[in-house]
Image 1: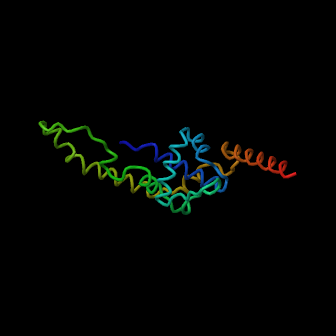
Image 2 (image 1 turned 180 degrees about the vertical axis):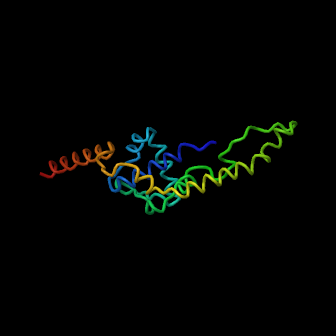
Image 3 (image 1 turned 90 degrees about the vertical axis):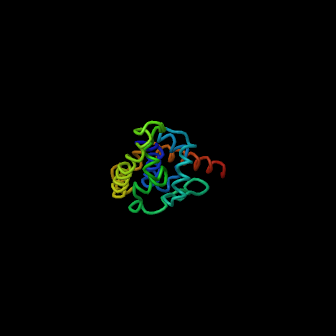
Length: 165
């Protein structure tokens, strides 16, 4: 089965903003936390924003969950970031028209693939971002991106105070 990494990147982004709300984490910092380029993070953030799962705005500290973590399911994240049908998830090889096995395989497999896809969506609909977030440390200082952000902000405040004096 093919589910792109955008699904798990989306979960990571939402968990980060759920845990580290109001911390001003940027897409570049999220990329470092996820281990991917910030461009990928911004692409997924745009999809989450379009689906109403994330509210993005200009400037730091403007991004937040689009609704409470208790009302965002993994199904919502999957549908926001990935394919929306069984035929998109289960890729098939090109059919060879002269072979009845090859030619009819899609027709034979389609109901089974749809059933599996529906079962997966049903299962994901029972897991919320609040459930996922509850599995991680509550102490924000356990997260390197948060600690680095606080150090960065502290440095700016000191620099601003020096400039104002």
